[in-house]
Amino acid sequence: MIHKHPLLEYIDNSRGYHSIVHIGKMIEDLHRYFPAHADDYELKMAILYHDAVYEAGAVDNEFRSAVAFKEDMESRFDNIKDGPIREVQRLIMLTKNHVTTPEDRIGAVLIDLDLAGLGKSRDVYIMNSKLVKQEYLGITDEQWKFGRIAFIDSFVARGNIYQTPEGRANWEIQARDNLLAEKDYLMNS
Image (cartoon, rainbow, N blue to C red; front, side, top):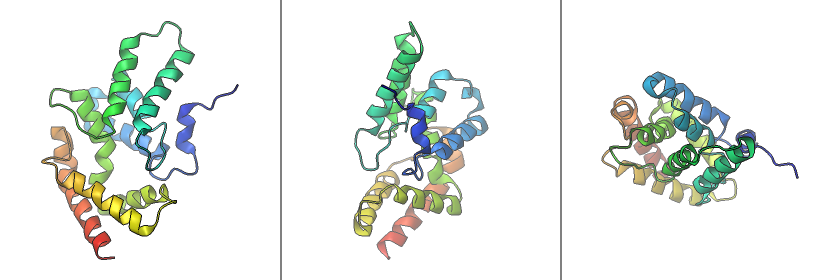
C-alpha cells in the first residue's frame, strides 16, 4: 500500500489558509523574531507538522497531526528516540488551544508563530480570514459568522493573545485591532 506523505497535505486544493504558505510564514517569522530558536529541531518539526492533518471544523486535527508525525518518523528512521517524538507531539497539541505555561518558552514561541497572522497588517489579516473561510465551504454564511465571532471573542477575551514578549511587542495591538474590526464587520453585515 502506498501512503501519501503527510506534508503533501499542505498542497491540497481544499486548503486556503492552512497551507504550505502558512508554514513558510511561520518559518520566516521564526528566523525574524525568534532567531535564538531557529535551529531548534523539535520546534521546526512541530511547525512543519502542526497542520499536517487539517479538516475544517474537526476537533482532532492536532491529535491526528501529532500521530502523523510519529508514524512518519518511525517509518523513516530505525531506533529513533522516543523523547524528541513526544516533545514534537506535545508542541503540536499546544496549537489546539494556543495556551501554555510561562515556563514553556518553546511552546510559547510555537503558539505565537501560529497566531502571528492575526497581528499582521489589516490587508494581510483580511486575506488570511478569507482563506480560512474558503476551508469552510460546507457551511452557511450565518454559521460562518457565528463560529468566527466565537473564535474572535475567545482571543479578545484573553489578557494577552501572544505568549512571548516578542509576540506581544510585534503583534498584540494589531491583532486586537484586526479581530475587533472583523467582529464589527461580521456583526453589521
